[in-house]
Amino acid sequence: MSCPQCVEGYELPGEPKGSIQADFQGAYFTAFQSQDASSNNSNASKRAVVLLTDGFGLPLKNCKIIADKISTALECDVWIPDYFQGRPLIPLNAMSGPDKASQKLTILDWIKFIFVNGIPGIPAFISNRPSVVDARLASFFALLKEKKPHYEKIGAVGYCYGGSTVIRLASTSFIHSAVVCHPGSFSMKEVRQMKVPSSWACPEVDVFVSHATRLSAEAIFAANKDKPESFEYEFKDYPGTQHGFAARPNLAYPEIVEAHEKALEQTISWFKKTLVVT
Image (cartoon, rainbow, N blue to C red):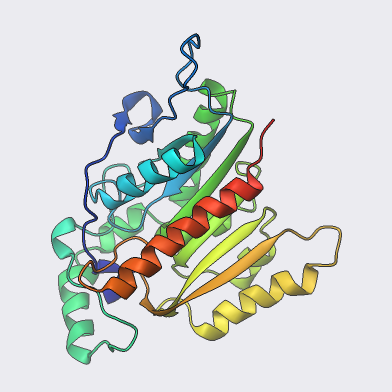
């Protein structure tokens, strides 16, 4: 399920540069344009990134703005699958201003969330439960493999609900690297099953993931780091932030905007390091 912090945030400035691709199940696509004038293939990128959104899905333009920035920085194609199939968990009109880490949710906040967003959103959560979403993504990655065979490596970055999904995705053969930004609920079993390099962007305060849970996840990787089956990992903490900062920063707070930008830099740096192609 969601939480009050998942329905908080602001829109990022700018307008998306990509487009919705009907042939790819309605996914948003922002392309790396080859500088080679003799190339007949505008999709010559050998690596690609798949961005999994928070509960607002594609209607909130933030994910598209972030995808465009990743595409430019990495010189690669970036996809945002419509893994909610047009029915996001949370409507845009539910967004409100985000809190700093020092601000606490009140009982009234929880009551308002339950009755305004929680109960009305139950059908959307049922139709977008993890098993259903994972099956949709399997179909999407099969489509990428069929129509974009030039992709040698694919990375995935996820925010909130998308972060939890990326954790599960990292146990499959669909991706080669993962970035997890303030994920929703996940299990230690799912962390143990991850088999690709992963980078984690962690807020100071998170209703979904306690600090103890975050430490437990990191401890799993640390315990395996000298074993042959280990994978590279990193955890970065962002003081003063709450769940949602990497996707929906409050533009009124410079320190939150800075944390958002650093989390994006973290994502780009990680993929530059782990999605090396020939």
